[in-house]
Length: 408
Image (cartoon, rainbow, N blue to C red; front, side):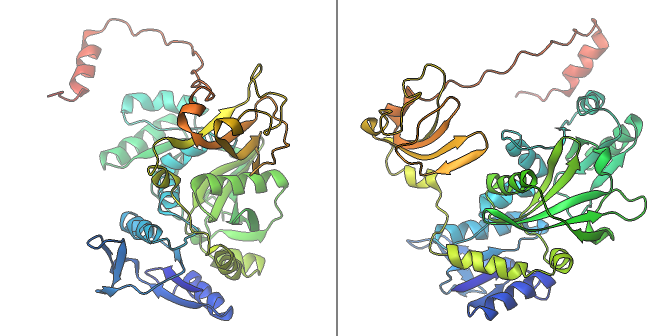
C-alpha cells in the first residue's frame, strides 16, 4: 500500500508514529504538506498537483488537518475522494466534527447523549438560553476552539452575559452548554478505529482547572469502557462520517454524554497512557479498507433520476408488519433493503427471512416512485406552551424594528 499522511508537522509525535508504523508493515509512506497541493480541475479527470508537479498514485490518504487550515484541507481531501483514493476520514466527516454546533446538531437527531446545548446571537436571548440548559453555572464554547482553548466556565448569569457579549463583539460564535457538575475536571477520550474502541483513557484536570485536556497539564489513566459508552463512542464517530476519531465523553448521572468528536486525534497521550500501538492499528485498518474507497452515494445516484435511497418505517397496521422481507412485497416493487435498524442496533444487508416488527427502520434503494407511498410522513413537532406576549411597549417595538436588516 502507498499511503500519504497529510500533515504540516512532519516531526510531530503523531505524524512520526504513523510513518514508522506504516514502514514497519512494509508499506510505502510519505508525509505531504497539505498547503503545497494544487487542486487541478483543468483536465478530463480530477487531479492534484504537489509542489508544482503532478501527484503520483496513492492507494490511501490519512488526513491530519489542523484547525487553522480546515477549509483548504477539506478541499484537498475532497479531491482525493473524487480521485477514488481511500480515506478513513472524509471531507464531510471532518467538516461535521470541526464545527461544534454542526456536530451537536447532527448528533441530537440520534440516540446519543449530549449536554443540553443552545446557540443564540442576540444578547436579549442569553438569559432565556441559560435557563433552557439548566441555569448557571454554564460552559461557554467557541465553535472552532481546540485543545481546551475557547472553553469558559461561567459561574453565574452576569458573568455568562458579559463573556458572551465580549466574544460576540469580536465576531465569535459561541455555544452555551449545561455544566455537568459530576464530571467536573474529568472526561474520557475514547479512540475509535472502524467499528470499535481500541483504547480509552480518563483525563483529569489539575488543581482548580475544569478543562482536562492533556495540553493544559491534565493527567491520564487507562480506563475500560462499559458497553454503552463503547456504543456511544463508535456511533458518534460513524454518524460524523469518521472511521478514525477521538470521541470525548463526559461521565454523567444519566450515562455517557458526547462532548466532542475529533477528526485528527493526537496519539501521544493515548499511546503513553495505554502503552498500545494505536498508530499501527490505524495503519492496519487503512490497509484492510483501501480496496473499498468511500463513495458519495448522492453523486452516484444522479446517474439515474428514477432511483434513490429512502428510509421506511414499519408502523402499526403496515402491510409488511409481521412478514419477512421476502414476503413484504418490497422485492416485487424493485426495492432492495440495505440495512435494518432495530432501536440502536443496525443490521447490514439483512436476510430475506428477517421478520419485520413495529418501529423497524429499513434503509432501502429502489425506484423512487415505488417508495414514495411507503415513506413515513414527516414528524410533526410537539406543541409547546406559548410564551406570554410582551406588554405593549412602543420603545421595545422600535428596538426590534431597528435590529431588522433592510430588506432592500
